[in-house]
Length: 253
Image (cartoon, rainbow, N blue to C red; front, side, top):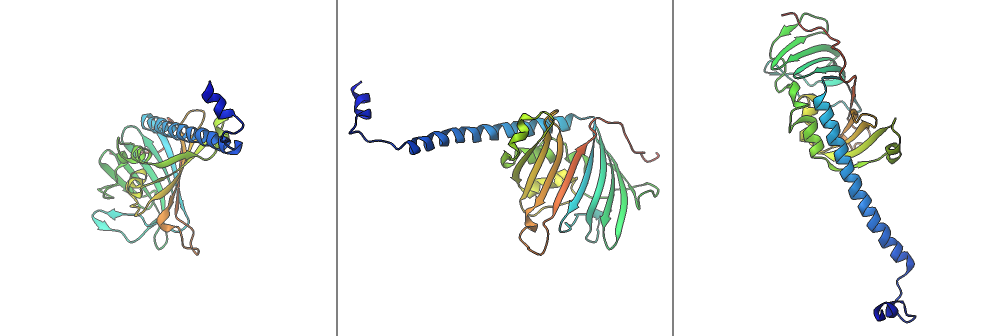
């Protein structure tokens, strides 16, 4: 009791109220930050689980800003530098993928790729007869969803993920937008081995609040940031039509 009296006595050292308030806010703020980071990681992990468990889903891929070169080796021969303008793809579990893509070489070129396991078919230009051949080295449909690779690797190795749209957390019809930095080496698996980033990337991930599915990934290639005369290279990946029916024709046997 004497100790308490001496603390609050008139001649005792007084702590400014602003300092006490700042310490309280610091403690609370630190707890919220840690809790939010844990919640973000759990949210992303659950979205990965749902993506890996899907019977099918579609991808819409576009690349904006400075064209980013594709790492393409066609039947053992390095292709001339090409960049992706857009692509539409459908994944069918467990190892089937169809892609319709528009590339920019000297002129825009369209092609279709069909992959079943380790087998690949190419239609070039789009609509031409299918040719079965080992079209693109290191192209592996399973990398996107494989344990320890693709989307799982990226999510497990994010640097300081955080929610940047807190208001969406109370809206069941909203989407959650999360931001983080990631090593570029892991991004290759998200695009089936077609790119090989040399630097870190910044990721904006959008997850639907209602069902916890990935809705979009926006990937900024940080190696292209900094030139005031050029727009950074950004990949936009939309995930949609989960568990929908097949909407493409497979090559004839």
